[in-house]
Length: 295
Image 1 (cartoon, rainbow, N blue to C red):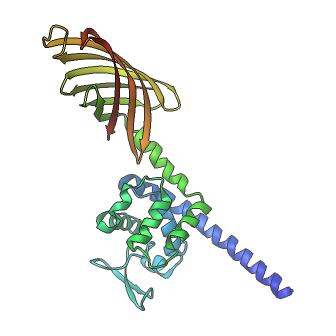
Image 2 (tube, rainbow, N blue to C red; image 1 turned 90 degrees about the vertical axis):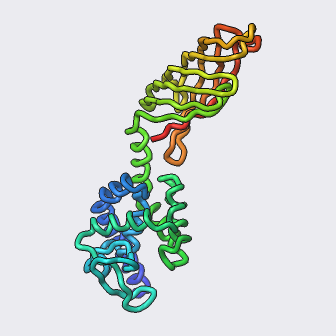
Image 3 (tube, rainbow, N blue to C red; image 1 turned 60 degrees about the vertical axis):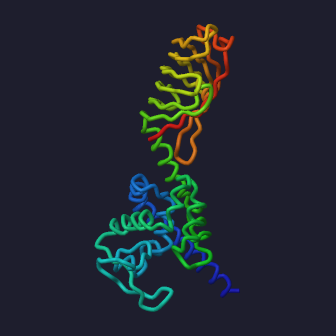
């Protein structure tokens, strides 16, 4: 019984100690991980969880002697080297002068090797996809590598650092080039200035086989991601009642929904356009478009 109590106490103390070390690691390097995320698009949760796992909370031989926090081997490395046992004995690993260099090299390693390119198609908040993708691409040989990363992320809520990037990357950006697809205007290009959750102002040039035109408009936030929008359109068309090409003016009230997907923003617009002159015996017709905001 005494032996059992001793073992339980030992493992409890070990768990508390290990957790404290991980929390200290996160506190020390979270700002660096977020900085790398903003520059390279790698989730901070992934960077931190890999750092914790690969470096043993910064206490492994590679981390203390070589400042290597991600277990990156030499490969085509031309810098300093450090040797340690891994899958094989006495393998060559990259050695750095500062931990910051290890973090930067980790970012460059993932962004410059093609086998990791598919990861950057994932949302910045999809840490599970990133973890599974790293394992699939061969970052580590452990069959449970993805599960270990996910466990660390969820245990310490590291995914909260990723949300910071998603919120800021689009919110800090206000002026966008736009590409529009829909009807009755098939394609258009323009500019959009958006203050998220407040208003947007837009202008574009659009065209189709029947219509061409320019528009100036804007929208005001209603609730959630919905905006009440209106545009004034200068239209050139060839199907008036007297079959003459004419310039016309149209008013286009619409409801706009903002869709944020994979760190991109799309405006979904639905409404109707009223023209002063009849076009094919109609003054009113439905409108629908998808507006892609390009950063």
